[in-house]
Length: 247
Figure 1 (tube, helix red, strand yellow):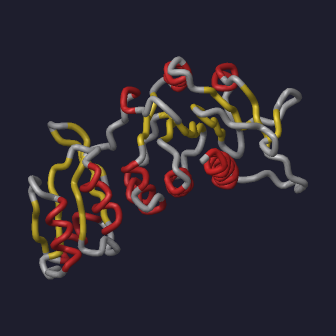
Figure 2 (cartoon, rainbow, N blue to C red; figure 1 turned 30 degrees about the horizontal axis):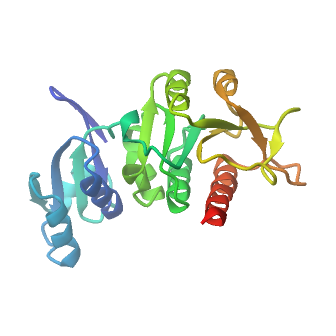
């Protein structure tokens, strides 16, 4: 649920995983944290501990149900703003693994992608700026909190921001099948790389393809195309495998 106030737009995010991720990473403006009044266990004490310095409200189940507009909140809510976009100067200067995701607007799928790249050691993601409205918690849960912990640039001008990343000696590798594309089976991913993936229906935009240094394809026999989450998993694991080989 979203509410407009004189301070801007805030949302109610529910669920223990989502609330814990938001409180640990502090990448949002947080108005208050709500905990079910009957919770008095190790988990609730942990949430109170990571919410240090914030306003904590103890509420009845009826109050929490009304605030969350659902009954699946698990006794934990946070009133907060939109996730803050991470700036370029937070990127590491040595080996760098980024994933640019364009055209994936489903919060569950994007959450799965965040979880995958975080698990396989990526430093972060860049996406167009999306508004998931009341589905924000779905994204956080699907990512197991990775959408909060990853470096995540939410871009209002994707091509411009990709050029800025490229200027930091980052190779742009587009997941794109074409006459001049290289097979991921043989392509050696550079030390500093941003792998660009498009949505399953439209793929990458022309502006992103024009910025790319190399097109890389996934070779397989089936005629059914991979989903965006599937393609992400293949590229992310290959990146992980190649980096492990260098150790």
